[in-house]
Structure formats: C-alpha cells, structure tokens
Length: 245
Ligand SMILES: NC(=O)c1ccc[n+]([C@@H]2O[C@H](COP(=O)([O-])OP(=O)(O)OC[C@H]3O[C@@H](n4cnc5c(N)ncnc54)[C@H](OP(=O)(O)O)[C@@H]3O)[C@@H](O)[C@H]2O)c1
Image (tube, rainbow, N blue to C red; front, side):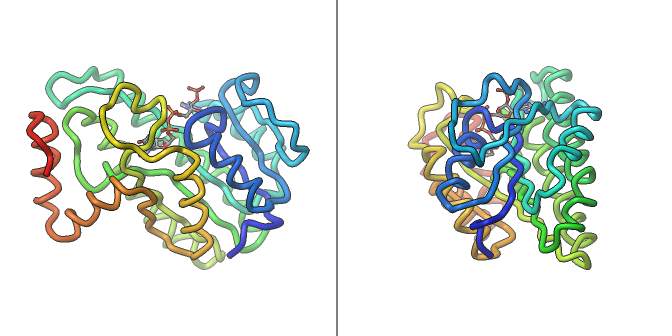
C-alpha cells in the first residue's frame, strides 16, 4: 500500500497528531488531503494546493453528511479527533466521561459509517482509527477516556470484519505518549507528533492493522504481551505515583 496519489481525510487536523498527519501525508505524495477541524479557521496556514480545509465537528451529524458529500473521492479516512477528560472512576466528572464516550466512540463511529459508501465506491479503502495504548488497560487517572478507547477498539474490530468483503482495511493505532496539548504538563519522555505521524503512515503502508507507533507505547505493549496483569500493575503504580520500572 502506498499513500502516493491517494485522497485522504483527517479529522481533528488543526493541531497535535492530526496536524502532523497532514504534513506526513503531503510528504508521502498524496493527491489530496482533506484537513477537517471543528473550526477550520484554526487550521495551520498551508499554501499547498493539495490541502482542502473542511469544517467538521464530529458530534454534528449534519456537518458529517456535508463533509462526506464534499469529499466523495476519499480512499483513506483517518479518525484522529479525540478528547480526554482527566478523572478517575471515583472522582471523575460524569459529564467528562460522557463527552469522551460521545467524541471518541459514538461520533467516531458515526464518521466511519457515513464514509463507508464512499470508501466502498473508491475501491481498496482504508480506515485508520487513532485509538490508544489505553485500550489495553485502564489508566485510573483517565478512567473514562480509557473506557472510550476500549469501546472504539472493539468497534474497530467489528468494522474490520464487516468491511472485509468490500476490501476496506480498518487499522487501529495505539500510541503511548505523544507530546501534544493532550499531555500538557506531563513529565515523560514523549515522542513528537511529527515523528509519530510518520511512523503511523509507515505502518499503514506495511499493511499492519494493529499499530503501536511510539517508544512508550511499544514498551507498554511488550509488558501487556508478557502479561496483561503486568500492565495493570504498571497502571496502578502510575496512579499511586510509584516509580515506574
Ligand atoms: N497525545 C497522546 O499521547 C495520545 C496517545 C494515544 C492516543 N491519542 C489520540 O490521538 C488523537 C489526537 O490527539 P492529540 O494528542 O493530537 O490531542 P490534541 O492536541 O488535544 O488534539 C485533539 C484534536 O481533536 C479535535 N477534536 C476534539 N473534539 C472534536 C470534535 N468534536 N470534532 C472534531 N474535532 C475534535 C481537536 O480540535 P479542537 O482544537 O477544536 O479542540 C484537536 O484537533 C486523539 O484521538 C487522542 O485520543 C493521543
């Protein structure tokens, strides 16, 4: 698989990983990249004629339908938009949990289903869902967010199976810690959005369906592979702020 010459649609493209994915797509020679944002005036200035700005709040069904009509030549959909409510199971705010579930799960699913007819028509389609390493284990300080990403992963698997007869591959990308606004103030050695965006596209080109694109994510994934309880214990240590090995 090659991004060269493809038409790509990216949600949440105004900052963080989404903005970096726009740049990575251009570097790989895409024909067109639809850069979608809740407020398209906030998209980084880009004079490249291949960039098509799109207004899209993924919680707005009308805007989703308009985006699908405006981008009827899309072959690759990257569902990157996401929110994170920092809150634990006992102390989290229910509205925050609801918002993460709405944006990260229900609305992401709405975007996927709305684009399926387009992807079917344009042949050899691809959906790339930016999930999280938090799909493997619940990090208690972001309990609702972790649950929303586990839900998104589960629906990604459903889509993968159901869309396979139509030659639509569905990828799950599970980053660990990337240096974006979402992690503002976190004291960790994080991967840059530019580096992770390039790694994501390289993994998609290699047709890898479950992707862990960064170093922290890969270290956590290794712990999980050895023992899922081992990763739970690590999440517990992080929650109680014990030194992580
Ligand atoms: N950073 C990490 O360590 C990490 C790790 C694992 C997974 N991820 C996932 O990676 C994705 C990108 O996150 P990021 O780190 O780049 O975070 P970010 O800098 O906070 O960016 C989040 C993006 O999502 C957009 N967004 C939020 N709600 C939206 C909505 N209703 N409709 C459309 N766009 C919406 C934001 O737009 P506004 O500017 O309008 O708010 C922004 O463009 C998310 O799905 C996140 O869960 C991140």
